[in-house]
Image (cartoon, rainbow, N blue to C red; front, side):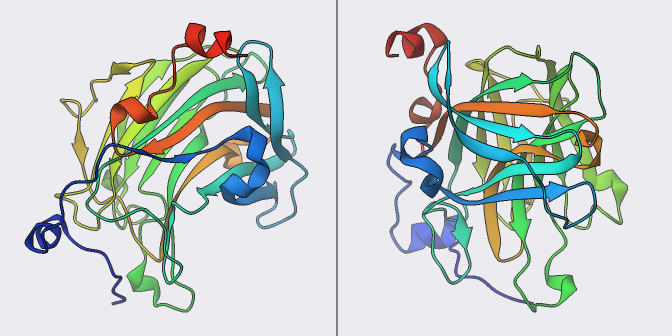
Length: 272
């Protein structure tokens, strides 16, 4: 089994480490261009084929500078991969640490035909295997995903070995979201390979959400492999056949809720 240089919460306390001070650790500023992301992923309908989508800064009439992700109908994927300097990469560093709760906030608007589709991923909390490591060392492709089907936004947990144990796929939450309407999302994620430590919470438009599993917090393993990174965009076979634009604004990662929460629309618009 491959081991990685993370400290558990208990070990951090033994070493005298205090909880992270409230701060904004990363901001996906459109003015800085794609350098704020680790990578951009595109894929056609055939696995690993080249895609023809685009991800670029744009200007929204309501919010001003935004990111626009365009996935053509024929493609399977157009996604942002990772927050540069923040996402964890084995051997390359990254601000993210195991056992610390991070607040990942952004604003969404979906532009697509007015129809219900199969749910496609608009956000992934994604793990990647260490190149050359045994397959047994990696069994949790994406611990958390958010999906959209043209009607509802949803959050799903995928436990370790979920591909063989379908009971490990748990739908945590869903809410109606209209096409063409801005909504804000904050996920509080505590990355951990320990299912009793890792957890997730969600806010929609500033309101903390109750989960289908009960309460407002779900515990489970939230990282695996050699890399862990957020991904935003449009992806999976249910996205094929539909032209989709995912508009993103106010991309933030922080150690406190206030720093990650997107500004109210009225306040954001006045700055434009």
